[in-house]
Image (cartoon, rainbow, N blue to C red; front, side, top):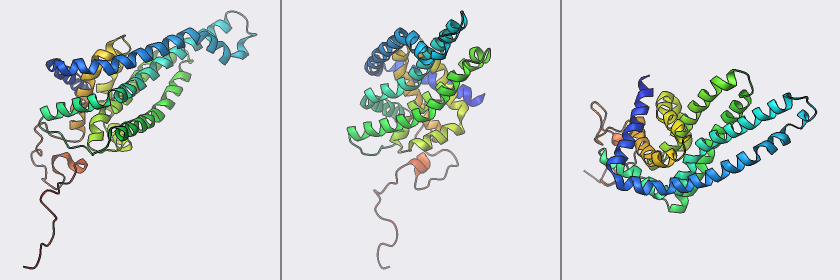
Length: 282
C-alpha cells in the first residue's frame, strides 16, 4: 500500500505544481485539446458504426431466434465501445506527448530544476526526438494491446465481465499510462523503453497508484485536457523517485559519490576534468 499511496501523492503534487505555475498550465492545454478533438471524432464515429460492426462480426447469429441475436450483438457493441475507450486512455497520452513534445519536455525540465537539479539530456534534433518517442509509444502499445484483447474477450463472461474486467482494465490502463508519462523524464536520462518497462514492473504499485486515478479521470470529458500538464509534472517527480534522484539534486546520505553522481548508472559521465590516468612521467 505504501507505493500505491506514494504514486497517488506524486500525481497530486504534479497538479499542485502546475496550479502554482499557471503559465505552464495554460500552455499545456493546447496539445491535449487538439488530441481530445481527434479522439472525440473517432469515438463518435465508432459509436455511429458500432451496430453495423457488430452485425458484420457476428454473421452466425443471423438465424438465431429472438432475443439471443440481439443480446449477443448488444453485448458486442458495448464491449467494442468499452474497448475503444480503453485504447483511448492507453494511447491518448502518447499522442498528446507527441503533439506537444517540445512543451512537455520543457515543463518536465522545469519541474526537475525546481526540485534541485535536472540531468542533461542527450543532444538530438527535434525530428529525431519525435521519431524516438513514436517508436517508444508503439513499443508500449504492442505490450498494452494484448491486455486489451484479453479483457475484451473476458467481457463476454457473465459476472466476471461486468465486475473484474472493468477494474482490471483500469489498473492495466493506469500502469501503461504511467509508463507513457514517465517517458519524458526517462528519455532525458537516456533510459531505453525496455528498461523503463522493467523498472516500473519492479514497482507496479507505484505505477498503478499514479496512473489508475488518472486513467479514471481521463474517462470524464475534458478532464484529460485539464489534468495532462499536471500529469507530466507529477511523472517527472515520480521518475526522480524511481531513479533514486534526491530532491536536492545531491547524492543521498551514505550514497557513494562515484563517477555517475546522484543519477546513478543513468547519469552521463563528466569529462570536464579532462582525461584520467597517467599524465606523463613523474
